[in-house]
Image (cartoon, rainbow, N blue to C red; front, side):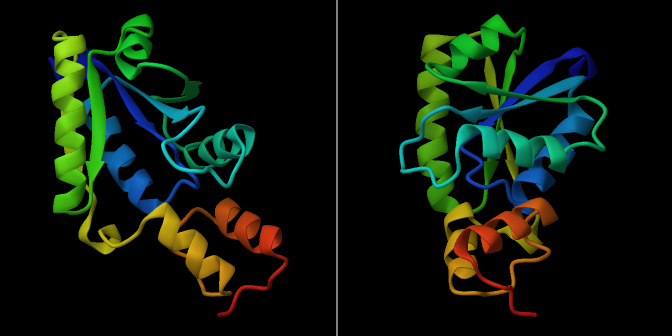
Length: 166
C-alpha cells in the first residue's frame, strides 16, 4: 500500500517555489513519508547556499506532518536506499521537463530497479514558474509574492538590496 511507502523528492530548490510545494503537498498525501532533499551541488550554478536553501525548505514545510528536510550529494538512488525510500518524486511543468526526467528515471531504474520514479505535474497556476525565472523577476524588482514562500520573497529582495514592487 502506498501509505506505507517513503518517497524522496530531490531538487536544487534554488529557491523553493510554490510549484515545488504544490508537488510536495500532493506527494505527502500519497506517501507515508516524503523526504525533500536539496542537492549539495547542482548541474547549474546555485545562487543560494545549501544552508539557505534548507532553511527556506524548513520554513516552507512547517505545516506538513510527514515531510522531512535533508540534503544529499552523490547518487540519488544511493541516498534513497540508505533512507528506506522506494520512490523518487519528480515534478513536471512542461514537455521538455519530461524528456530530461524520463532519461533520469530510466538511469535510476537501471542503477536501482527496486526504486520507482513517480511523476507529478505541477498545478496549472504554477506551470510557468521556475526558480530561474523567479530570481530574474526579483532581480528586476518585480513582484514574486504568491509564487514563492514569503521567506524567499524577503531573501531575494534583501539580497538584491531592492524593495519589491507591488
